[in-house]
Image (cartoon, rainbow, N blue to C red; front, side):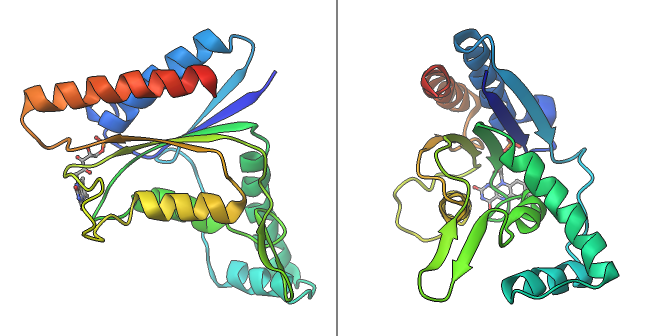
Length: 207
Ligand SMILES: Cc1cc2nc3c(=O)[nH]c(=O)nc-3n(C[C@H](O)[C@H](O)[C@H](O)COP(=O)(O)O)c2cc1C
């Protein structure tokens, strides 16, 4: 039995296109993998530790191979707990809106918390950085109001950023589903969403 972790990052719930397509993904996933466990992490409900000065000090202590003081140890344990929860999954589904050409701040907060040495990546002065979350597939559902696919404008800091971070953590098997443009005329949006749902269902059954 595998565990799928679904990370949801739009606050728009029933109006959200990324969640609508993710729900279709989950329905197909459960039909294709009836014995698997599916855990939903709603980033608008989740209480994440602040990524504050103690935490950053602790991160640098780890990077420099040094020990912690009491405040750093407490801050670091809260971070490790979130990393452990992330790494406990075998497969991942992430859904997100584009906000201001990037990602919602709740998802950025989550990424800042889990991007930790010894947890999701390692550093070796000779070999450089290595991802520690390996051999696990991830599906990512992106919604954006405009169209960015292959326009070469360099304005899309949503999909390239998420995939850079997943790659940094060690992911190589990434399945993107892009819903765009969600701010078009309603009939066109319905067609766009329907196409994304078909793609998401196909990814779900083979993930
Ligand atoms: C705060 C905010 C910022 C946004 N910024 C952009 C943007 O930079 N580019 C874009 O194409 N759409 C932008 N949009 C539109 C959303 O990407 C679009 O509505 C998308 O469908 C949101 O995903 P959701 O439906 O899953 O919530 C923005 C929406 C909000 C609420």
